[in-house]
Image (cartoon, rainbow, N blue to C red; front, side, top):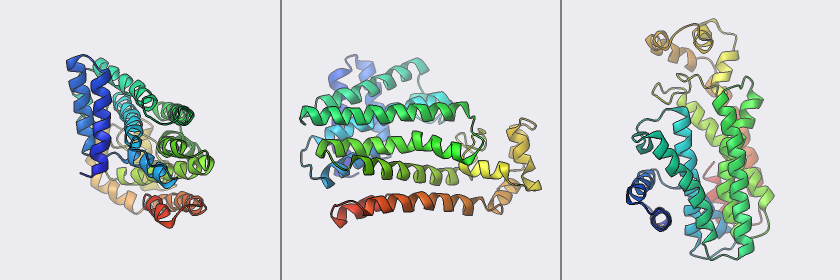
Length: 304
């Protein structure tokens, strides 16, 4: 585990121990953070990266990164509770009301943690504005996702731009706001494009998963699934029937191997890869236009 991960975790735990007074509440919240640590803290790392690449040098950036990760963890918990999936997560092993209460606490604690950093008040206010503004965009995107009323590619790309792109942007903008008054617009643009490309990549991987979080099994209309549903191909009718409630999940699962072969031969991977690459190239163009050292650009480009 990297030193950065450890420092972010320590800051998260300090905030929890300071503000969560009840022992069982504190213990459960700490367990959530400890569990999350095994996956790393990529959003916090983006906050630190942007702060440092724009000239910041305060150690309190780890506390700001912890604030971002607390917000992301809160939204992750709410997402799993809303979708009623990902049952292996520790917040799914306790009652929903308690999990929701902790998630609410994490969201407020993220703002409190930013407030308690040693940065100039004006910088903190800008960072808090960036975080809250982007989280509100993500809430709008999450609502679109929950109602699952997306039928065309443009709607889906807009939704993940709000949901995934906004959260990447939140992490990047908090670090930027704490370091400088400049570059905010361009950072938001490439961060959202990175978020979209990452989500599209995840959509492609998910297409071949048949577990509890499978988009296909859960009838979630992702970019590749929209392609499959709209493609004029007789062999894909079984998927269309499943999404239109004409056949049950059990019937679909019986033909898992056959369906996977059909998907592989449908052209969906090639199609989705092209769309993902467009967003990657657009993000790269924006990153290359930044007036910063090449080493920082390379670190950003490595995340595409």
